[in-house]
Length: 169
Image (cartoon, rainbow, N blue to C red; front, side, top):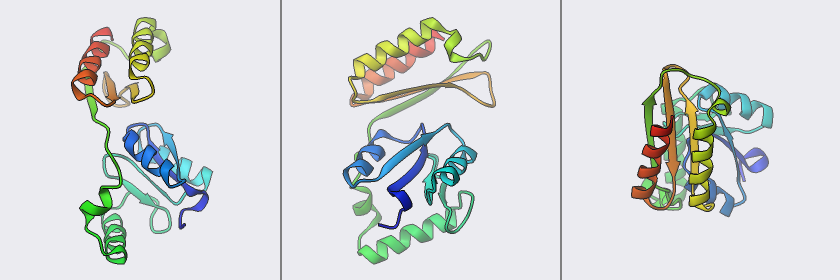
């Protein structure tokens, strides 16, 4: 009951299990491109107070405009004390989906729309997932690399698909 608009902002890399966990309690999850700046921008635009990245950057606009490990730790400790629960017990409300990420060196960075073969492979993998996973493909903002992340129910299967997409690029 403390989240304005029942909204949390995360990046496209945040686990699908988080989205499903939030949905069960009526919290919406808004995804942004990777980067704190996009998270904060969306938080301000949408009136959200809580956001972050899977990497651990958590932003509580009530306390800071950037990810702050000490603020995050204090907020988590406060919940643990209030609820009289361990961190493991609190975290158990979310079931993480297996998630495999890999970076592939590329000769050039271009809009993904200019790679029709890769687009077709992405659609094929999404079809195989049947709504029980996600595919995130993007070029790095700092290196000549293609980043491929797939999450789903079967880790071996998604690992194979990550390699398949990387080989297509």
